[in-house]
Amino acid sequence: MKFNKLSQLFLVSIIGLFVAALLTSCALNTIDYVFVASSSGSGSGGAGQIQIYDSDSATGALRPGQPTVASGGNNPVSMAATADYSHLYVVNKDSNNVVHFAVSGSGQLTQKDVVTTSASPVSVAVNTAQTYLYVVSGPNPAVLSVYPLSAGVIGAIAAQVTLTVPGYTSDTIVPTGVNVLANNNAVYVSAYDQSAYNPGGATTSSANPGWVFGYVAGSDGALTPSTNSPYKAGVKPSALVSDPTNRFVYVTDFASNELIGYTIQNGSTLNFLINGPFKTGNQPTAVTIDPRGIYLYVSNGLDSTVSAYNIVLATGTPSAAVNPSGSQANTTDTTPVAIIVDPSIGRFVYTANQQGNSISGFILNPDTGALQGSQSAPYPTGSQPTALASIPHGDHAIQTVTP
Image 1 (cartoon, rainbow, N blue to C red):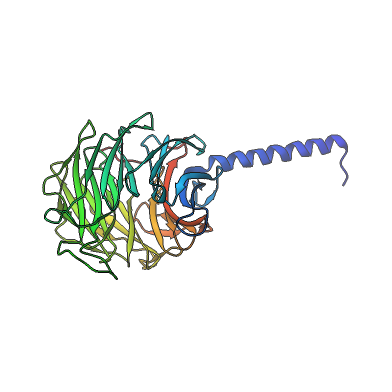
Image 2 (image 1 turned 90 degrees about the horizontal axis):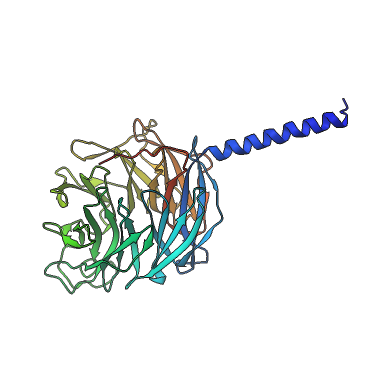
């Protein structure tokens, strides 16, 4: 069958409209933008980069999004976004700096201001009021610094405290994470005492090795130690998270393969959950809670797995979520070191796999908390990815709990 020219033009037009509709449909399927920080060179000291992925609303599958940007330094290790998802902050450990990026509605990053830290920064958090940025650095010295924010721009330090263990003020403290409560009222830092815990090296202190430092956060940025702070936290706490209702704090213990839980009393004081600690996989590296505060996930570096838990809301107890197959092993690529749940619908979980040079993805069952591997995962990244962040696509609601 042959077509005349008019028929051919009509056919081409129909095909063009179909392709345009298909592309538009694909764009609308983006539920989140996922950012991964990694090294563009070989080794952890290479120049940092941030890759941007679009997350599919139906499957959670990732595809390349906006162009990759430089992280503004070497060895980026932590990222945090503001509550309105308009700003992203990246700490570059080997460059001793914090870099501010503006985030467009399409997920594009534009570098703005940069501040220099007194020691190597290891973790960053932003309060939900978007008024203060918290950066923990160290060791030598180990400090928590508070920077005021004005429309995302980082100001001069408003407050700074040194992390020391009472009675062991000369010990070397190594910070590993920082978290601020959703109500902006308290800040917590996980750290370990290297003078008391130093595998392969000498120890010079009899102090408890693992700690969480707690502070009441003033409206002026001031930090006041919470009652009985610091709090014991196993041997080598590696990361921490608080639930969206400001009732519980959870800390991963890398050395003991445990998750330590605390209740928050009087707004900032921590007390152990009476039935903890809770078993994880081997060498837990990171922890996250879904936006509704129902499920908790831990990445296990040595096992290359994710442990899934239901949070018993009355007590804060995390109980293992069992997959329909009966397996609790959610396998990732090699050495997951960061983990997030998507903020839009709370249905997808991602890990950054440092030795696998990839992101693993999972679909979260909203009824059970169980995980299922997402389509075509793992997704390739740059060299040695270390940090993840995600922001919702602007067309979608955000499934968060209002404290």
